[in-house]
Every structure is written in structure tokens, then in C-alpha cells.
Image (cartoon, rainbow, N blue to C red; front, side):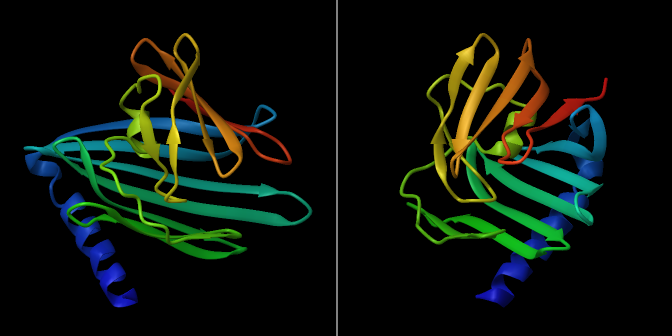
Length: 201
């Protein structure tokens, strides 16, 4: 099982990085801030090729909180004809390394989610056309179903204000703010201090 997961990771990264020359690629840059202070960067990327679309989020955060903390995070999600086919969320930090995978198996998603103080292997028995990484390029609809690549949990997207969409994942409410159809910022709820992912124009 572990070998097949790592093979899938390597295969997906290989296919993802070697498709640029034949694909339509778009990148968006964001800064990660706490209380207005920058603590890291995030790059969102969309690559379209034929009927498939790959989304990736790559972030690096480093800050001091009763000691140096760092988190490097990578999400890759592959879609075929608007259905999520598979995703990988790889997190490395000074509190451990964690890997979550979601794989479509003809009529359900096989979930193996492992992140900080959280594990989930419950299958998802419905096709999903939206995940967190896709929100960086696609404005959602009210009451649309979303799956988290990190937690493997399904949530309803709620439009709480015009162009402001909220999702609740593992008890935390995160807001995605759009300008027109493009994502401007994300407010991530945290028990200690909320942080903001702000687009750099």
C-alpha cells in the first residue's frame, strides 16, 4: 500500500511537470500573513491538457512561536472532465511529516488521510467536482460539495456574503473572498490566531 502511494506520487509529479510544454499553464502568487506580518508564500498552479486539469498548491511557512516553526506543504489534484480523479497532500514540518491521498475507484473515493493530530480512512461514496486547490482558480457555487485533499472530508460551500464563500473542515471555518471570478484572499480559521492568504497582483 505504501509503495503504491509513493509510486502514484512520483508518477503524478512526473506527469505534472513534464506536461508544461504541451499544456495551458497558469500561476498565481500569494503571501501568507498573521496579524499583517508575512510568514510565508504560496504558489497556486493550474495546468490544462485535453480533458484533464491539474491543480497544485505549494507553500512554505516559517515563523517563531515559542520556538522556530516551519511547514512545507504541497497539494496536487488531478481532474478528468471536471471530476476529481486523485489527489495527494504532502506536509513536512518540524512536528512531523504527513501524507494524505484520495483516489477515485469507479464508484467511490478511497481515502487515506493523515495530517497533524488527524486520521481518516472513511470512503466517499459520491463523485466530487470541487476541492480546495481548485478554489484558487474556480469560483464555487452556493451549496456545492467540496472535498478537502488534506482531510478527505466533504463539506458544503456556503456563500455567506456576495463573493465570499465559507467551508467548514474539521471544525474550522475558512473563507474564500473573490473579486469578480478571481480569488483575492483566503482567511483560515485557527484556534490560536487566524491567518490570511493574500494574492499578490
